[in-house]
Image 1 (cartoon, rainbow, N blue to C red):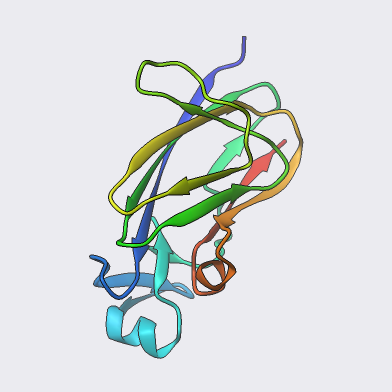
Image 2: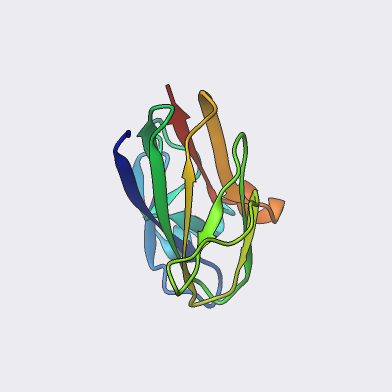
Length: 141
């Protein structure tokens, strides 16, 4: 059995969020500077696509991803290339999905066995949110 990988994704930003600064294009910027650049949603303190994936994975590994929505807005988190299950409160598993709607202040966990090699986008499916920073990716070898 392959090893299990755990990761965490913190969603941040929006006009009523707690984001006071984030990294944009390799530079730390204040929230005012981010708004001026029309980039005000972040994952783990970084806005937009990075050169480094959220996780480097191998086919057969299990990824357990804890997601925290530290914003006041709902976000529909969408994974390309694979399907996941939500880990429920009783340690059970929900149905297969590729999108999870998360409300402000929620923490939820998804898990899946990595089965599709490639570079896979994970983003807010509210495309204006993705366009202004809520995008990351997974690399599967």
